[in-house]
Length: 300
Image 1 (cartoon, rainbow, N blue to C red):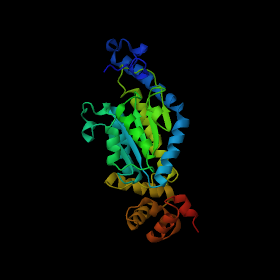
Image 2: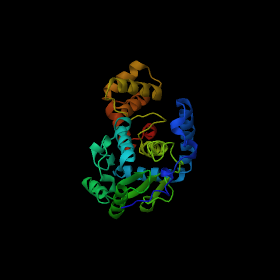
Image 3: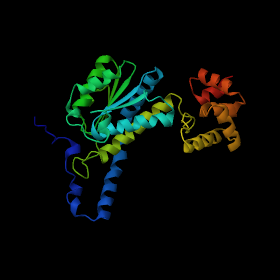
Image 4: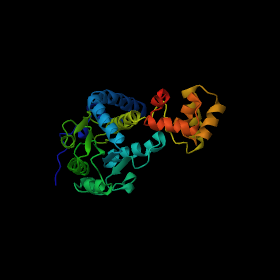
């Protein structure tokens, strides 16, 4: 079946790069850099929709729901990447922020033929996760027309889940399926149709905001410190100590002592250092404050 892509901004030719194959490396790099500078300003225009999406995701997480990304190709890979990075950064379980890519895990490195063209595969992937009305599904597609994403969003709406779309074309098909539509027009790509470039950068910027600000909203951040970081290697252990030091002003030795007593839980160690409480008492305060460090410090 013939698919008309002529109306998609992401498929148009960029007039500034028509002779890309004739340029020096330096000139081509300067040109790419100039084009990339358009991305952030384009994303800025979508901030109202991004704000609404963050609020919706935060509500889902507070109600024990999940943030579920779904996409195909580059879009799917970016969703999987953002989901994976939430685990060490914010200390969430891998089933709290989930990334689905058309074709499954193997599609992270090798394209799976036909997977993104299926209207039913997205639904099936969400059914396998036992999607509920508490969850938020974020469908990502640079073109805004990927059947895998459309089918997934349609099913999510049927279930009563919150739906968000992220596309790099205006008035896209996936926007029509989402309660909140985030649309960014970055203009044609330097390399025609290569949406891993500006479109991919725009999507990454948006996903950064969605996950990071939602995690702020559920108490995973104190000031601008990642206080639920999981110290799973030597670098992160040292980072955890520095976070406690920055948050409380204590010495390296005290931060190390409190972290050890807190079983490497940064939030607990901060409350201990700030109040002189035991680890158990600090945990009790944090529980009463729903995990928010500042609220726990206000707890009489």
